[in-house]
Length: 491
Ligand code: ADP
Ligand code: LRH
Image (cartoon, rainbow, N blue to C red):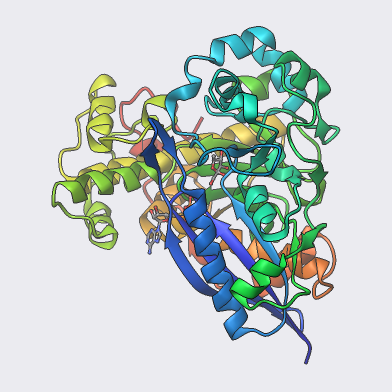
């Protein structure tokens, strides 16, 4: 029977993978052929990504895909959003990209907001305010030493695609996180570029998921052993856009939590919701695949755990996530809950101390052991998920019957159970590799191995998945609510 193989490159803030996606007779399977770590490093006084190093991992992964599968038709790339690299007129990367957790934007936020008000920014882009949105990073860049030599700003998945093909494009789902895209027209906003003094051609031309970027270069062909016909195809290059494609929902009455370094909590819509209420609640209208809208909110994520583990490992403490989660499952309900959305948790550094400090500041008993801190983070995430699902219902008038949890966090049974308890709705957990799967199916559709709408693609994915179901427990949200200054999940 005819089978089509594609390669998906999916790099999150904490790890990356290169996946072979095989579509045979309308069923999809993935093989993770290469995994690698990702993280922040300090270089020249800034928190940066090692994009050059990540590209080397990409090539290693593609070589492994080529070794197993002769006929790779296409490659799709997704990474976290917002960040970019600057290229000179010759296409050379001027510096390793600054990471969104760097504090360089603090000094420029007020100035940007004075040039174009928050209200007007939101009216155009529908984007939630985050202190690291691309518009703020570019404002910091305009004052920096590279700006004079910068000919192009290139989002990170687009930069990897450029290195593989020599073709410069800006994929639109990721462009929607810059603050420079008109959410309704899905074109660059001349008004925003103007107001911020950015040259209109700063970003390469827009491209939609499913469209070809270009064939791989001869050099990449030689390095990886991929066939000359292999083409890079645009996918939802914002990782969250690809994750949402692979939310295995069977109806419209669902919310999703894409749970990784961040938790992205919301709904898929056909049209943006840009109102005073959605702005006040800081909901975003990011661009989805097939013109859909990702109406969601960034909620603090497993970053709080990742950074806590990093701290404990530095002290020689317990760092086995499974052991810590087993312990946390035994903790009594009703423990302290912090606001995971607080900006104080954005920067790297001693996370357990900041969590304890947040508990003290809100008059709650502070967790002392690693197990208690893990439990506090998970209670707090579940509380925030519940609050956000209810806000999404209120802002859109839609009802949510089921909550889908996808991404690495879907493997955390305690988090999923607490989410069911707090939201009072069943949770369907999985797939953990939603982002890679969403990347694969969009390529497979372009290759002609799958067809139809996102609903059709989700039907195909659902058939091949075993989701874990979590039912709201006997202990309801109200009983679990501690005396914290956090709005109760029950509204
Ligand atoms: P990102 O794409 O942001 O790098 P992922 O979706 O890969 O993030 O999720 C990473 C997170 O998933 C980890 O921080 C960890 O908390 C969680 N995770 C991964 N594997 C497991 C597991 N086996 N059990 C519980 N949680 C897990
Ligand atoms: C998740 C994510 C999220 C963005 C953040 C920068 O990986 O892409 O959607 O807000 O990283």
